Length: 405
Ligand SMILES: O[C@@H]1[C@@H](O)[C@H](O[C@@H]2CO[C@@H](O[C@@H]3CO[C@@H](O[C@@H]4CO[C@@H](O)[C@H](O)[C@H]4O)[C@H](O)[C@H]3O)[C@H](O)[C@H]2O)OC[C@H]1O
Image (spheres, rainbow, N blue to C red):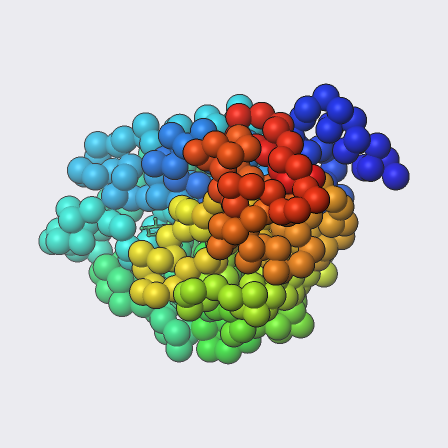
């Protein structure tokens, strides 16, 4: 009842209906006792005003993660020369918006500069370089990060250690040493081990459990396990499987978070794939909701326009809850309902229609019904049909947003 009144008020004063507080993903997550619902972002897309408008919407996003700008190759491209410009842009954006920042990442086998991958190292020299990097970066962002992904993807699929430069030169002790170094630089930040395909039981999840135990056995602090959640429509692990795996981690005294959620499909998308994607997103988020020490969910960017998927997995995409035109997909409603939120008219109209056929109509560019459109009615940014369907009138809200009502 209250929400309906807010919508009427918002319409009356010409506000964007989707900004009505109380309707979004982060608001619903916090109401469920979670710390945040968030999204990854990256520097290049921050020049897109409509993108940033939604990124800044704390009703949907209470947390952001830099997708690339805190990685080793960006921050320390040359040994002992640190460049924080890109990372700071995102850290400052989070600060300005009052959003939590998940910091990503300190030690990984990928996106390393050549001075690391091609250097001639001994155990002692590589340890010194790793500790120097961690100390500098964690100190620079001290107080800014809710959590650091201290080590990313240390495992093979069979649960053995990945033959990275870290493992082959230093051995498994690089993990506890990395965590101890981060803890010394910022005793208050949460320290995570982060990986993919550890969201369901199996050898790799066992490997991740063993990493937590290894770090703890050294008397070193580890606060959390990050479950990346890069899934495939129709092959996403079930809610119960994800929840029971989360329980195995939290039984070791650490929290968990879903840190990089996206659910990709073989293109082109169809109504059936979008419906299955909604189910898959919903079950995954519901697993976190059902797990007391699952603190939050982060999607790996919110719009298909800037998703990493098509450039990494040939022929696949449409992995995010918003399409490339910033129209909410059925997945959005799936997430919201898993978070205990209600799909109101502000959700369904500015976002997805409750029927997948409307989404298809919109993305195919034929006449639009009660759905959101970025841009002015009939203008160049008008992303759906150039005209509203019979019985609907195009209503202008602002330069970015119009809707067939
Ligand atoms: O701009 C992009 C960044 O967005 C990108 O960020 C990384 C993306 O995810 C994380 O690393 C990847 C995780 O998925 C692995 O592939 C999996 C293989 O097994 C499959 O079953 C599973 O479905 C797949 O997801 C990739 O091999 C990993 O690289 C990483 O934590 C993020 O930083 O990084 C590259 C930039 O170009």
